[in-house]
Each structure stands twice: as C-alpha cells, then as structure tokens.
Amino acid sequence: MAGYRFKHHQETPDEPPLCKSNLMLIDAAVMKWAMASGQAKTNSYSLDDNEIVEHIKGGSLPVCPDGATYKPGATIWDLPSRTVGGHAHKLLPGE
Image 1 (tube, rainbow, N blue to C red):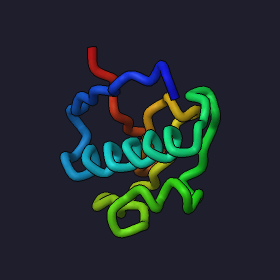
Image 2: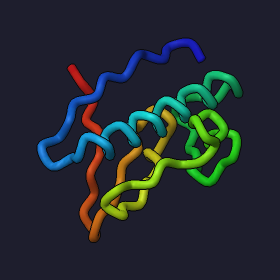
Image 3: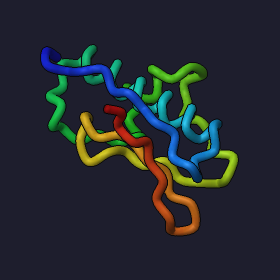
Image 4: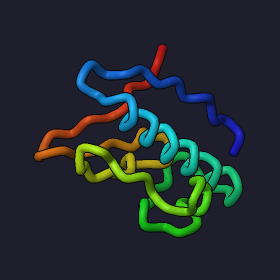
C-alpha cells in the first residue's frame, strides 16, 4: 500500500476523549486491514467486515459512551466518524 501517509488527528472541541480514542482505534484497524489485504486507498469499506474488526483488540467495535453510531469514511483514506442524535462528529486530519 505504497503512498499511505500517517494520519494525524486533532480533537474537536465537542469530541469526548473516549470517542476520539475509539475513532482512532477504528481508523488504525482499517489501515492495518487495508495494508494486509492490499486495498487501494480509494476503496470503500464496512465496519461490519470481520476482517477489519479482528484488527481491534477484543475483536469487536468499541462502544461509544454517548450511544453514538460509528460510521466508516467514504473511502479507506477518509477518517471514520460517529453520529449522535443526528449530528456527525469526526476526527480532523492534522496539518
């Protein structure tokens, strides 16, 4: 998977630290799966994919303390997000 860069994350003001950590875990699992399986960064993915979830410690998606739903990015390269009460929250790429 040549051409991948390390993705830095910034906390958004309304993003609880545990949710940020969960999103980072999900993103890391997606990156590990993508590299291991030779995925292109423009491919889409599903958080229901067991091959991705097995890269998360414990073998399951983390649970958001706010009851949010975690959503995949549009592509492997896009950061995952969460939705709480119809409002989307996501990690922001760093500079």
